[in-house]
Image (cartoon, rainbow, N blue to C red; front, side):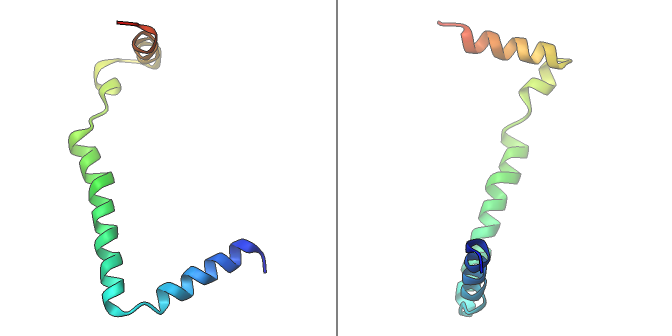
Length: 71
């Protein structure tokens, strides 16, 4: 068997043999990751460039100016 298949089987067997409380802990971890990466992005990190500039050329010019501007 190749390395990837053995690694996948290793983790699959490990998760399948977890006790009930271990599965609950992983569920809590996945819910927290979902909240961090999806919910917070939607509400706290709006797409600044899409809302303030009309096309890709304006967006790229703005980014270039801010990256090269030394203040």
